[in-house]
Amino acid sequence: MIEVIEAVEKIALRIRDAFISEDVLYSHSINATGDVQLKLDIKSDLIVEEELSKVFTLKEIISEEKEKILEVNPNGKYTIAYDPLDGSSLADVNLSVGSIFGIYEGGLSGKHLKAAIYVIYGPRVELVVARENVEIYKLKLNNKFHFLKELHLKNKGKLNAPGGTQQYWASYHKEMIDSFFKEGYRLRYSGGMVPDLHHILLKGGGIFSYPGTDDKPNGKLRMLFEVFPFAYIYEKAGGYAIDGKNRILDLTPKHIHDTTPCFFGSKYEIDKVKEVYGKRMKVE
Ligand code: P6P
Image 1 (cartoon, rainbow, N blue to C red):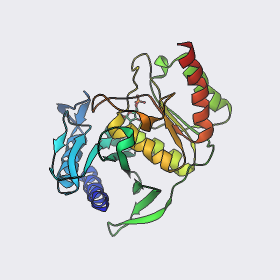
Image 2 (cartoon, helix red, strand yellow):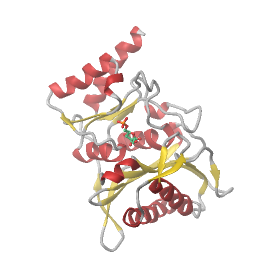
Image 3 (cartoon, protein in one colour):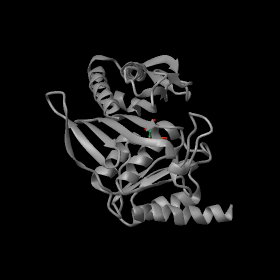
């Protein structure tokens, strides 16, 4: 697994450099999920594919930007699913963005995840690696990542990151989000999954939600590249990740680009989601 982490470190340096050298204008191409691609999306995807293809323990790589699975080493052990530059449209307004990696062995359901990694490109470049623990590393001037600390979620937090198009939220979802604000939670939502979940992780607790809505009944965030890796990270940090009723890591996608509603957070907040959504599941 160390060879995968070392490849991600190389990827992080090359994408960081691309932010400085490349323009961020839109290209004329569409990705596998139907998103218009930024030139940085395409450049980042090429960088990731190039670096991961050299890793002998990787059998296949699956990109959020590509329709199909790519076999890179027939004798490899792992499959890696990645979002090369999540929230890339935020890059052209100079907000933080990230790269997300899920490393799977023996299948592509939540239970097959063996590690999860993300890189956040902000005022600092930081790397978070979840195996048995969750560790954060900071990029120093010598272009090396230095271990900072382990990350842990407390029982309850103060941050509320409510995703999704509010006009399409179910009434009970809106009431739940408002109830957190009435308890004094602070709104912290940038529109970037990596910085928004990184924020809650580093502050030790809170809730990030991207529910099913009238316009997106299965949510927006992709299971393999985004939701499973962060569910793994949050659980290893002592938190929880559910789809409203089920544990995220108990789910299995039917297609590699499947999405799911998702709630990530500490115990107090996720228990509230279970209470509100559990009632709805009974009613419906
Ligand atoms: P919305 C970015 O496009 C992204 O995929 C995630 O990084 C982010 O959490 C979500 O979409 C934001 O979606 O609908 O709130 O703009």
